[in-house]
Image (cartoon, rainbow, N blue to C red):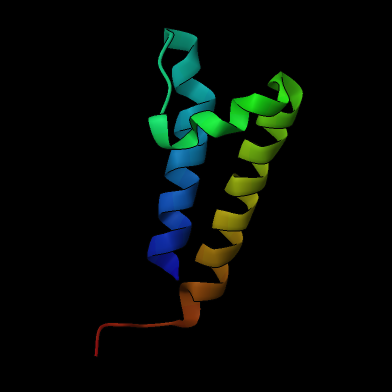
Length: 64
């Protein structure tokens, strides 16, 4: 779960930052169909959900 959460957080934070340089993640381009405010809200929701998955997955130790 931590891997999925980290991936979600990295993609969401990256998709908040890279438009400043005129770029966009192709996999997350569908988010902008609902407008700027909704797109930012969805991205922030992905950050929160990813953080929650990382936090909840902290007890899972796959080093066995």
